Length: 362
Image 1 (cartoon, one colour):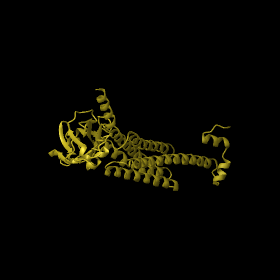
Image 2 (cartoon, one colour):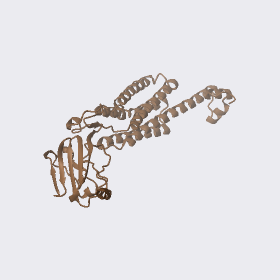
Image 3 (cartoon, one colour):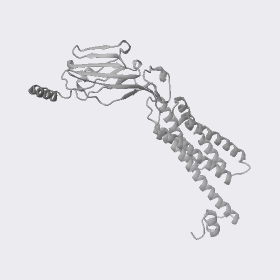
Image 4 (tube, rainbow, N blue to C red):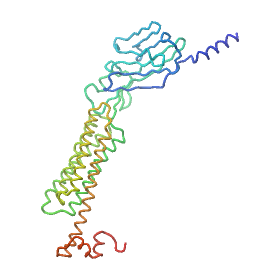
């Protein structure tokens, strides 16, 4: 009796585990970009030397849709899954993954059962559909059969709404335009305080109205984009933000013209802003056309350049406005025209300190 038990234990050790082990894959997703859907089934401890020793069965819920009999080298498929197949040559490597055309893929729980002589095992993989942020024909969740129980609000019946951008990218997409608008309002404040005249009142009113409209549009776009639960709303929000932000170029140009006209530095600022807007538009177009959007950084870089141009414009206006105040005071103190260097040399020290906002003695 004991010799028989010892022989069985020794045979078990030599033959390895009586249970086949599988890679831990709980679910897999596919999108409208996939022509072929692959449901992975990887056996980790295959010891068979020939595919004749292998037997593979795939079932969806309780219905077998694909069977491979290695002893007969024969495959059987269910009528609704005629494109289903496995790679027989990869079976000895432990790969029994099921492949099928996207049109025949049905959402649900797929069970992979593998038998290798006296050993067997199975694993369950859930097939999900990921819908892009910008829906098109055939990418609606209702297009697919949903045999699995409903999930939460963002994922129901195995259909998952996937955003174009990560949460951090969304934050940057919203922050840069809002920052640029805040900088514009800073310039507008400088314009009304230091450059206001009767000739520019009408232009200032137009800038005020245009700035308010732009602010409302960007805020509405941000509200639509950030939640990301509704793909149509997200797309609308992104479009509102990126397209409308180009208005800042015209606003900045009018601010410069109202304040002191065009200079080489202001022209450089406007060119930089135009380039940033072009990058943002190109990034938006590439994101729309790509199946898997990977051009988010390009779009964000464009928005960042626009905000940088607004910052440069604000600093320049502040600097020029302060310099013009100094020159104006100098002309009041010295009616006779003097070279610029002579003007600053003859400004009273106390008055210069006061103009610069510096306490005397610092």
